[in-house]
Figure (tube, rainbow, N blue to C red):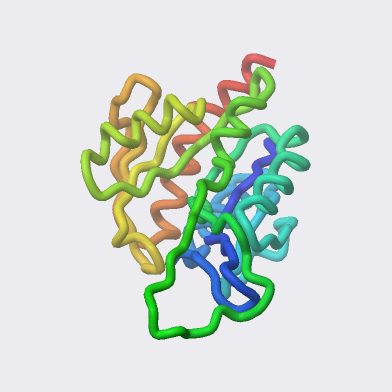
Length: 215
């Protein structure tokens, strides 16, 4: 039995006390993956941004808001896990300064100065111990396989799940699984629950069962 950490949902980077940057990630794929991992007989811990979905009762869920909070929680819990499925869509940018009060309209353009947030999966990939595995998700619009493979290498992932923007906040999805050689080892389409079960089957065959044999 493996212990799997799943990141899920979006994160929020506040501009002022009431406004924030985020994206349309719903957490549905994270929920579906948690259900599939549990059904396969493994333990699940979820670090989730703000979502409306209800995660499985058998999973231990840690709720966070910002990308920095998601990274901090993952760094705390990942060392005790066998692997990570990084399906969350953390906000990539945050404002240099968060306004203390609500930003008021002035009739003039508002300039936002943004900097990148830390990369959760890349940070964990750099810190993983021997035997741990990482699965990343790449949502791309152009040069999809090339960009997904570049992310796989940069983030030290074992597999990368490639999808497109139509997957966000949708009930169905279509994905490709890429290995370190850039080969498409699986193409899956259907409901997020069906696709999640297919992803977990690949993870079990290529990573979990292999790791157990090597122990």
